[in-house]
Length: 121
Image (cartoon, rainbow, N blue to C red; front, side, top):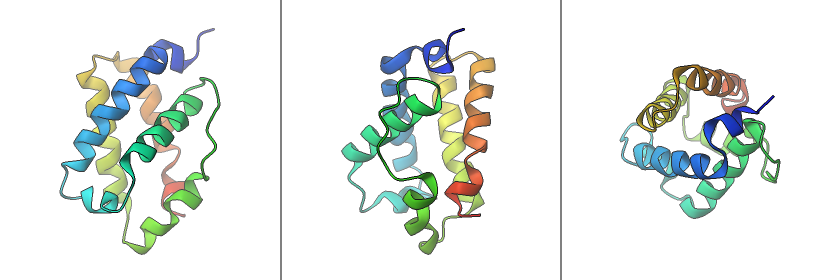
């Protein structure tokens, strides 16, 4: 059985999606401020590694847990509205890349499962 990572197109597809996704996020005035002091090259690399692992691809993610990585953002006021905006940008990115809806649904289910960890709940 092929993994979601393979069905999505592997490394090249995850790389393209992350780059488009962050373009959307960084131009969204409702969430872009959370990235003002972030090394975006490092963030893109970490996100690519994390998503590859989350989608069943090779696990080379060495970053902090979602809860640890997002804890500083809670002090800046990150909440469910922001989480939903980010998730919406990922969904729009996948649609823009013509990912089949059934795969988008699988991705969004994985994203939804991270809500409580990202928001420290």
